[in-house]
Image (tube, rainbow, N blue to C red; front, side, top):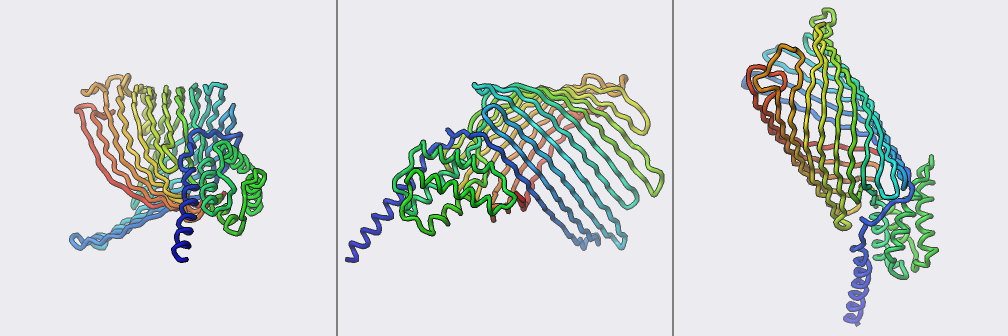
Length: 456
């Protein structure tokens, strides 16, 4: 009797496992969204500090820094149009105190930053598109030292227009549909397996129901769960419905689409122009404030970008990015009341990156990516018409980075991020160096921990 029961139990578990595994080969890269609207509001706070006590030179130091950021994102995606709006407010602050042989020095730093960016793409039936967009940026820095006060301000406005071919589709809703189906299959509540067409239809239903906005998030969740449950009921897919059915559906609705995933490829070529202004003032020992510089810049760029996103399967994703940029920078410097000529520089930049993503479960994402950038800058006309450069006014820069990141959702609203980064930069020839050709290189490692709370 015990042997029969054991064999029955093993057979039941095997059948349930095989049913769930049948969905592992579903290709989410074939998914395309219906007309959707998405909104998000994220609030991020981070801080770190350091204390050191050096007995050798009798020095004590304390340092802290903090960051607060609020970011709102809105995008609309239809077959004919894609629109993205991003706005953020960031505030950084830090303080430092040093004591050496009873001599104390203090400094503080505060910087607010505002950013607004909008991009629109208008598609033809063959997925070629026309794009236009722009950005506005403003930032300020207040730096207080022991015997001086420094303040700076920078503002930028930019516009871009371009054309392209291809489209990147959001496929996280298709991944969520598979999460829901395979875990409900393990519970044995389905009368049969779902076809690929039914999975696609459920994915589009998930995308559509998320468009609806409710002031009460509880009512929103009830509406979403009811819509998915109605899909299963209308298609006569359910049997043995019990509490585990609803708890499983609720769980994978809350956690099944926490990470953005994309599929497709896109080539985008655009021209952009940007006007910017920077100002720097300094006050020494309570004296009258001196305007140290007040500079103006004009940037014109022709940018060619290629993006490729490929979900290898439900758990792995590859991303490739490549860009070629030709830019012209014009700058006019006003330093301590002295005016300069417009200086013209040409810059050529080639960059690329490869990202490897792993999604072991609904809450966790691990990423490793490598990036490389190479640029060549050539001075066309200098600020001073009589100035000459032994290096010919040329500069070569390279930048290499290897990064890793772990994201874990403690709850659908609270995300923990742990990151590590290794970077190497090399520069040969520096703009402004007259008598010698300079070579600089720098290697550094960094890491960080961040908590992000999404208000909605």
